[in-house]
Length: 161
Image (cartoon, rainbow, N blue to C red; front, side, top):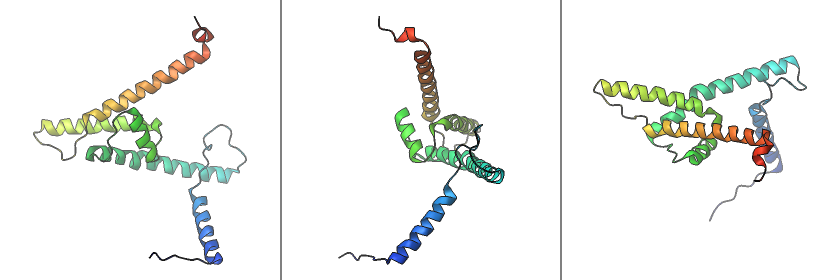
């Protein structure tokens, strides 16, 4: 039989306060670098900018390289562009960073090639399909945006024959 944990209203209130204070520390001003700054004072704006810069640097230097490491180990292995998008979103990474992932993949492939040229092998090599997948996804997204723009700006294209 499972035991139930019962908390008093005071204990629940304390837990909710702690949870809310934690959530407040995680909030970021997503509009901090837009021309319209909103209703914030200069000190708050500087703190917000610093927080966003630190988070961006962490993403750029830690999270994205760790995704490449997972690809090399085989724990992150997307099958196609849709699966790649889903997997990136599941880790909290926006698809706009696939260019950075491609740059890291190029570096890793160069290291692999150099190591093989020396007659050695790395234990975890960069799978050759991954850079191709990233490049295909970047081209597909560029074509999608361009064609949407063309349809939106040229009404003659959307007229029936």
